[in-house]
Length: 250
Image 1 (cartoon, helix red, strand yellow):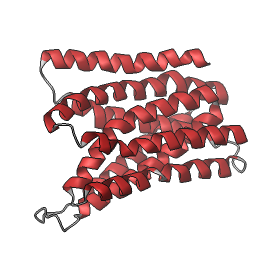
Image 2 (tube, one colour):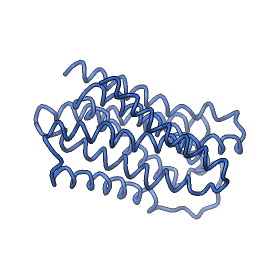
Image 3 (cartoon, rainbow, N blue to C red):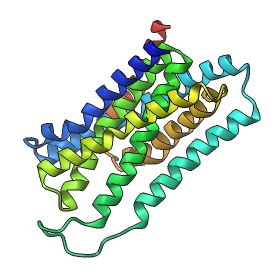
Image 4 (cartoon, rainbow, N blue to C red):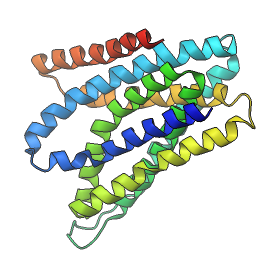
């Protein structure tokens, strides 16, 4: 158990560092950044679907002895949780003009939502390690690939909302550290609730399916140029293939 906790903390720490990726975007022109981001989003979508169906779901079925109604309901709960989380983020709107001295409510709302998201990511990673180390590694990679475009986007939202570059980097990193709380909570509760894995992992699967299907895929459909669309498909398939390749760890 101590080894699994160590793996989880290292994984979450590595994923949290991605929140500082905004530093790398400061010297990149907006148009170039937009071009690269769409391919990262495509790769991320493929990896999230791949992790859900190739790693988490098969190992969960093996662990629990089958795909029962309870597992299906927990997966749907995961979708619902992320749907509600996204609704909370969009509930609050600010109609005041953007100024350099005023931090707007939507920036704080995005920050809170991102913190909750990272908290759940921490639980997902820890829960996956409790299933198996290979599943934990695969989930960490899938989460990290998703975090790259997300954190760049969050950094942009914070800047647009009135945070300075230094403030945006600091609060975004602080938000990422809530994943450590998620890891700690899972390991504290794992000794109390024997069926914790059968709850957390399907919720993670639902969350991954929601993020990939509701947030990432719609972004990809905004691009209609044939050459770029083909590249998106290639990157999407590549994301799945990376998850297939990780089966070798098992």
